[in-house]
Image (tube, rainbow, N blue to C red):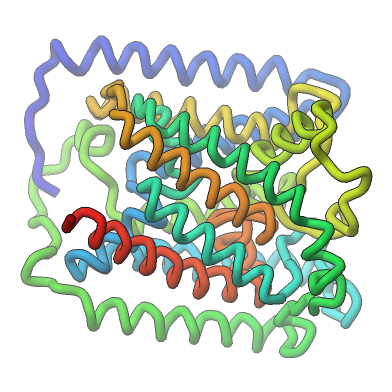
Length: 398
């Protein structure tokens, strides 16, 4: 990695503010850890979210962005980073599962793992989420870390996601009674055992990686030559996506071990569900929803929850990382950007509600867990991204 000089007048004020942000987060986690009710879990969630935000911001770990790079420029590096995260996370999850649940007997699932029902509703929700990503320009997790970079437009995407969740709750009972209640929940270790499940997933990921490498245009996207390393490069230059994938996998495995699988939509969905309940916009009962694992939503009775602190930590960690790198650049969106982000957010919120999660909760955490629902989400979401990407190209042409 080549080194380069950064003017000290620009770096040090931002670096000191970033240190203050990190110090505040660590101080808050210390206070929370001392709470008698679930304090240590809440503190871990805050710190894990902070680390996740730093990794996302530094490695540009955005599902839509890296897919767009592949579609536009045959640049596979970002998608390879996602494959690395899935492969390493799959190994870690299977090791943990073999300790929690030594015999993967049919009818038993690992506690809390994101293993969801498979039906056309999952496909529909995943497609909608993919189109929403393409329309808004980011997945939900990327909109959260872009808040830390000063993106005001991301606020409207997240507001749209809240509306989308509310629409999803309104349509849930009809879809549940129509098909979801009888949809199978397929966990690969049930049929294959841990060993063959692990090998099957790694083989599938290897095939995906081989395809991506074959399509990669190395003449345009060659790696940078090695040079004199300086620590400033770690904080200023983008991290390789494979390194981001390794760190995402590590955070994902540790999060599942400590409190819950990775996910970023549970808090958004819970806020939407709570607001809709208070405004009497929800059905009297959401049939079967609370029996599924995934990015579970609840009517909030307390302000603080593990996923809520995880999301706050994500934004804070991304903000601190962006400050040091000189990438905190608040910018006001145009009316077109506001409408595009809000509309894409509605699609993502509705899709995430039906799919019981997003690219983090259902795709990453689901595939790592050996859930067939994670693979279904991935395929349908990619198709949705492709469709939305093509739509944006055609609209831009006029």
